[in-house]
Image (cartoon, rainbow, N blue to C red):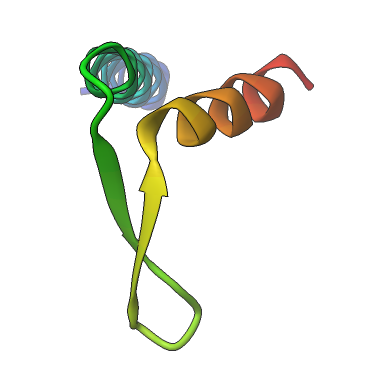
Length: 62
C-alpha cells in the first residue's frame, strides 16, 4: 500500500467516524437523551445530547 493510499484510507475512516458520531448525537438529541463524557480527570460528565450536538457543530464549522 502506497503512502497516498494510506492517507486516503485514513481520511475515509476519519470521515466515517465523524459521520457516525454526528448521527449518534442527532439521534440522542431527537430523543431528548444525554451523552456521557469523561472530564479531564476521567470522571463522568453528563451533558444533554442537544448541547453536545450544538458544541460539535460549532467546532466542525470552524
